[in-house]
Amino acid sequence: MFSPEGPRLRELAVQVLSSVERGYDLLAPKFDHTPFRTSDSVLDATAVALRRLGPFDAGLDLCCGTGAGMDVLARVCRRSVTGVDFSAGMLGVARGRTGPEGPTAGWVRADARALPFGPAFDLVVSFGAFGHFLPRELPGLFTQVHRVLRPGGRFAFPVVAPPRTGSLEHGMLLGFDMVMRVRNAVWRPPFVMYYRALRFGALRRELDRAGFRVELHPLPEFGRRPDGSPRVRLVVAERPVEQQAGRGPSAVPVRPRQAE
Image 1: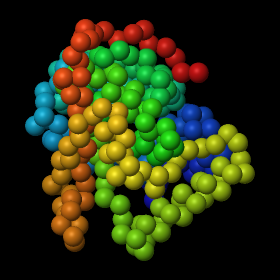
Image 2: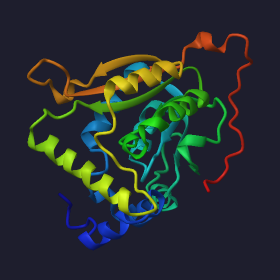
Image 3: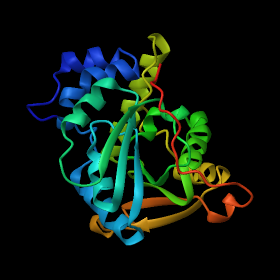
């Protein structure tokens, strides 16, 4: 499951018994050698799909981790890209991978549930982050994303079709979530990472309620399931332009503040 450069079992145990923030600080140096990092194939397919919708001026990678999603933004944004995460350790690794070419890159340590920006972005992306939010937190999270997008801006993220009930993969995810729930019932602080918590129907409803117009773009690189549905979709949620009526536009972010 992990490459030789990845974390050892003892390291994982220490990380999972920490808070989410502290756990990722500890995992950061080896994170790119774990299966928790979004694969290059998904990142590349997302970039291809976004090129057809762009180009964009300013992009934000929500919960950027070690910065893999920033590489996607750099391919489709012309002026600037920003990564935001609450783990100082992950941001430290991300800063170290920034290349000299492409749009201007910046990094902000902050909580995604309280983004320190105004409506400054044309594109927000996120990869593999939603399992770290409880279902009741999604409405607030999507409201934050809606708030930092300019009218006409888009919020995009890939969604993999859930495994078939009864399959080995389904059983593994179910077992992982069960272990995490037991851990959080007996240990504090909690470590929120529930990979089965995200239901597509609920996700779309919350995006609608936050004011987005939602489209689904199949990623053909991953083929289709036996029932004909795409194995991977790119969710593209647009902040409609007409929502700006009666309000003066603002493209200047507020002064970033550090996460607690």
